[in-house]
Length: 164
Image (cartoon, rainbow, N blue to C red; front, side, top):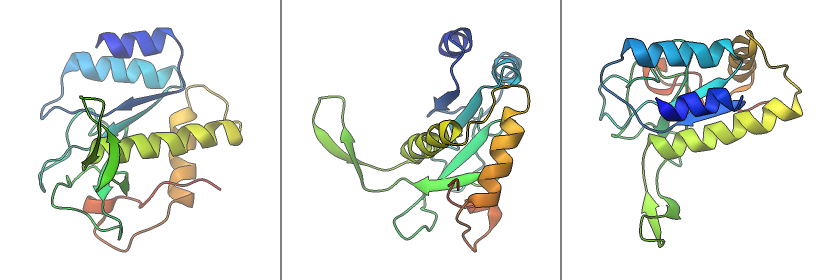
């Protein structure tokens, strides 16, 4: 919670949360609500639950939940289902590992980072005013402009997030 508190105090625009919990808590919900009420967009990974429900905080209604798809934009066996708002590529990605070496990774944490980047880039390009309605405005634009995937919305949500 201290990381979320710091981000709120620093008045950031977007918080990327690449972790999850199987159950929500009042404390987590309260701090997420506080962030969103301050105009902060929270983007959270749905989790690598192998077909089980998305994790918290991604399951909260005022959090943008990101699932994982492969290079062909198909859900992977890692994918969570349920409250998935959008998906992004999250397989066979090269990143630094905990030894400072390059390794190949899979998972919704990587998808979430990609989606967060798209959101941040476009918040500035579209000059979206930060306030209580920021979440609703961003969700509207993401839904309107996402690359739809003709599959079950429980698995792919509204597709891959983009902006105009």
